[in-house]
Length: 226
Image (tube, rainbow, N blue to C red; front, side):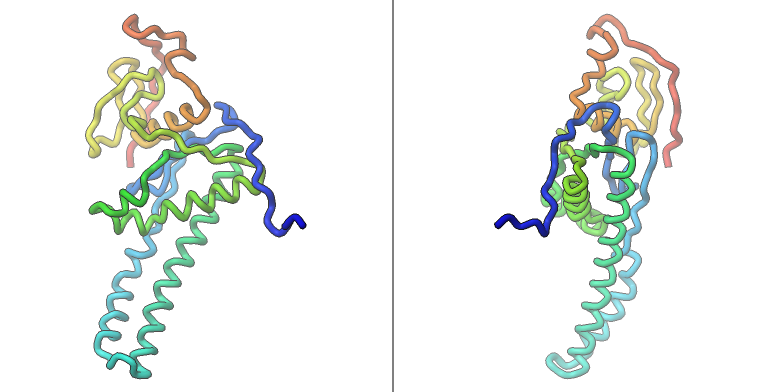
């Protein structure tokens, strides 16, 4: 007998430039969309560190196995659960907001486990990228929508307007293209590239630009970096 307790995942929708929203996930902002909107990182774990430190200190003073030790263990566990619940609630609300704006949500195919082993591990784990993308993907599938993971190579370096590579250091928060004159927030530029890749959109081909023969120019717009 077919189990109907869980809605079947539907992936009929195909990404296009009209139905896709690109998101660039980061540690400065939780995410920035291809429409220029940003969602800040709540940093639930970091904000509760002092409380956890106090509880851990109390625990260390108790005799292991005693009633007071068990009570202290429960207090620490309760605080960790509070942080986890806050983060999960944030992820669900953010996923709902994104899915209300587009049928397809495109994101980078990140090696989250690998990144979590770097010096940025605390920030990455606090943001909870993996849990968020899982929630987003399941909710999208159940609603007949879709998430698409794209190659993350050079999403921040390539110009989303003309396609030319514009090298920049991580500290440079504004994308300023010397080829076509586009000036835009670095993360918004990346989010637009992510959207384009998901939709199979080639910037140069779409604009009729031939490599080496000049670039298409448009009125540049600026989004102030945070």
